[in-house]
Image (tube, rainbow, N blue to C red; front, side, top):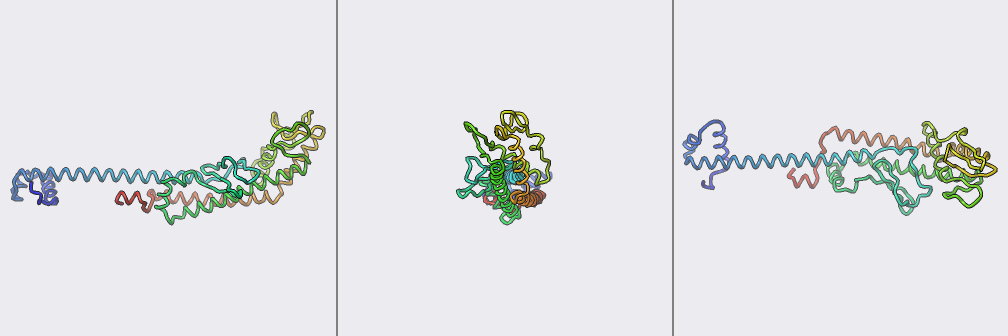
Length: 301
């Protein structure tokens, strides 16, 4: 078959053939040999099949790419949460061995002890591609504000814990220790966490089931316990006074500026979390991540 026959001509023969015309009648009308027309029809059909296959492959590639982008969106949105009251923060700000885990986010501490919030997948290639697609989308500002609010709330919790330590030692005149000394009286460091949890729950108008005066049990050997097996302090001979002082420390902590800061930053974080989630919900309603990235351009989009 001569190469000079245009593909458009062969496609026309194929269309006529599929409409019911015979190869012979098509050849007669085109003033071509019937064998030439037959080969032309076959070539046009093969080319159409190749184009159709490439089109399906491209559609599948685009669907897969969009699914990967939405997986990143879902992952980021799932990280936008407010920490639980029981989240344990470090007493001091220097970098801990492991970051704080807040849903899908991690809170690290730099050399100056300042919290740095990072999302689980924001350094992945797919997240960078998402940023190419959504260069000026409101979700990035919403994430930035959420991170700032979470940072402020974590700092407020750390300062509350530091204040709890100071108040416990001041009220009880005992040292807060991680490990049991060989002798004497002391406060277990876990008591600081329990004090903070109680205050956080009360400050946020949540039900406080941490401890009440009647739940602090005094043992003959001087231990102040919270139920069975949980020792808050050891104060032989003055366990009753120690119990009262622990509760006084809790009450003082409840009215402290640090507790007020926890409540204030919690409210701001909750508001920014809701705003960020709304931004992601609006993006999901599009059912298509707008814009393009370098992968889209390589696909010819």
